[in-house]
Length: 99
Picture 1 (spheres, one colour):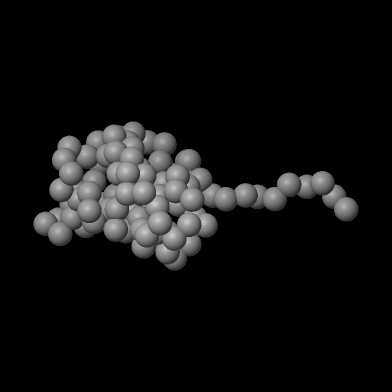
Picture 2: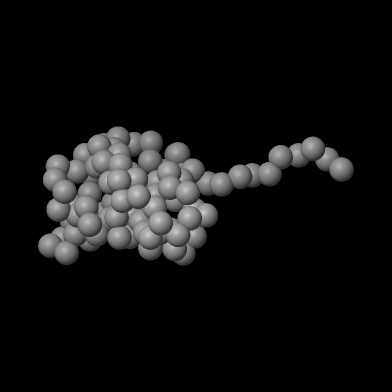
């Protein structure tokens, strides 16, 4: 048998390297819109899945963990306010359920 290592989980590091490209806009409902909307959602869901234990039920996880991930996303993508907070957290919870 060979000792070759497996590929592992994707982290999308190259996709998010350009700091000038990390701006996103939101509509009235809190959904990401614009050219970087799909990159933002991919990044946000990836952060929720990597920072929160996947083996626990969403209802059993402390809400503060979701808020901490939101704060990290907010700093990384330079989001000025919390208007989209509830929508992004809900999308993160949905990605946790579908993981």
